[in-house]
Image (cartoon, rainbow, N blue to C red; front, side):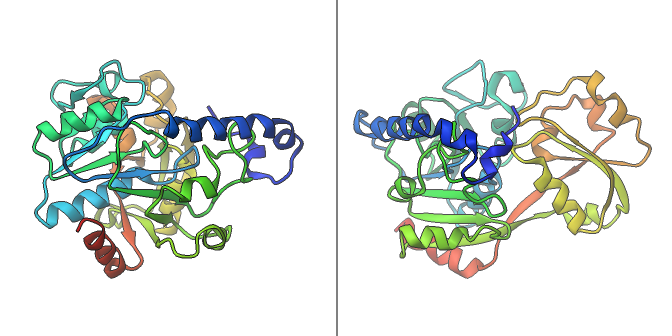
Length: 320
């Protein structure tokens, strides 16, 4: 599903028409937390979530978190809901499970640390604890009330910010900024803040830590590429393409697919006929059969904080 254009426009007719439904949606999210008895984890649980739909950069932030904890001697286990997965409450096995079994994000996370998928986050945390996790990193689930989180981080796309500021379906928000910040321990802005998001956050909460950073590609591969084509089926493919252009790559053509898109060989025929470099993301790569993987160049993307010292100090304080 493509995001409606009016979600980025203030006071459009459709926004005004759908605002009552947006208010109802936000109310339902708020009520979920009042009606639930959450699971109390035995180990710290860090939730990396968002309050807006679409790609904000959650998964790269999760991987950055895992890297930090692993370097500091902690055993990390990821918990993911398993987008459209046919299995639940399982530990991802890269040798056995497919995208239909566990979803694309879970396959990607499992390359870096043991990963549990379960839409019931409380039950999923209990399974992760059986793996003797020191830290459980929950990819998404900020609006999920079934488990008590030790720390909750809200990730924003700096370029898109809050969109029109309205809740679904009138806008891209799952809940209001004010409501979300009440449960958050920090905010992470990915990319340049082009909508004065920091100012809007400070207006609601003057003291919440705001960390910022950017996505960077694997430069060893980038240096060898002058021109190419690229395709992606992530939350916001334009973010990936823009990053490649900033690295000086001439993209002769780009192909956008919906988030979590499962590729069929016939729809990639034109792309695979290209004689030069064909670039895609690591999240897309887990959805490609081996014969196609041989023809594409996977660009690994890392999240880097602008102030690594501040990030380091924040995490050390948060897990004490």
